[in-house]
Image 1 (tube, rainbow, N blue to C red):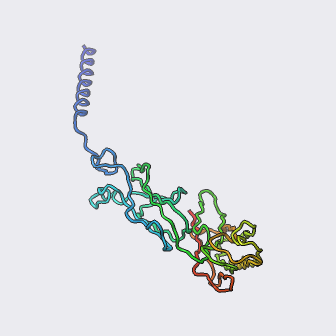
Image 2: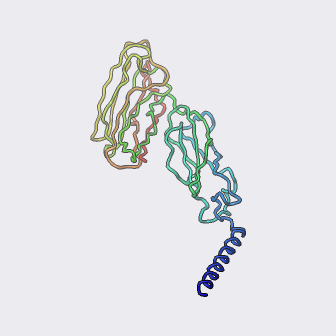
Image 3: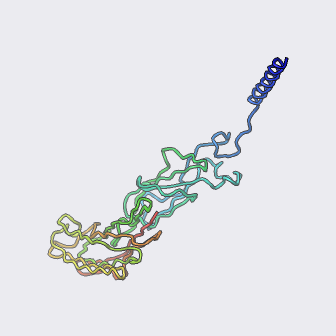
Length: 291
């Protein structure tokens, strides 16, 4: 008798549990409140749009980009306070390394060479859902320096997570006419940077020898004060050189921790033409970012 009662009780409980499960599955489940959850009925995939960008040719020394989510719902103050403003973005130039993720929606570049660029930006939600290709992009050309001395690249990025602590930059004459000589003063902070090597571009195919002749040069590096003085003069050629080209390469080493380091041209720097007239109009200093 006890066995029959036990079997009956067990079957009864099983039937109740099965019924409850069947009933619960038929109920309408509450929708996710998180607007970044794909199950939310108002959800859309992350898609960024560039809302402000430079013209195709940029004569200024800096460019600024601004962006936002294409779906206006994700730019609304009505979003949940725990998630609003938490979309992350990153950008890159010329298919190089992506920047670090940030909630910033604009960037200004102050240290770009005079050349062509392709800017791209992408986003991801706080749910770690990332924007898919194609990313929004904009092409532009920097053309800000004439008759100038510039570093190339003007912006260097060292990846500390990859152990990078050395880099090279060229000293370049930008868009000059009838240049015969140059006096270069390079300043840097010796507490953070060490100048390891100087290489002159003095082969027949190099910029300064386009019109033949030879180069007389004088170099005076001062590692204690973080200064390099260099004089390059074209002699016995058919005249001064025109256009843009590299003059020398500087190899640096980071010797102390810093997020940002600068390399600049001293005020004494100058460019002279074939009649010894000063023709230096501007200087394009350099920056080194450590990520």
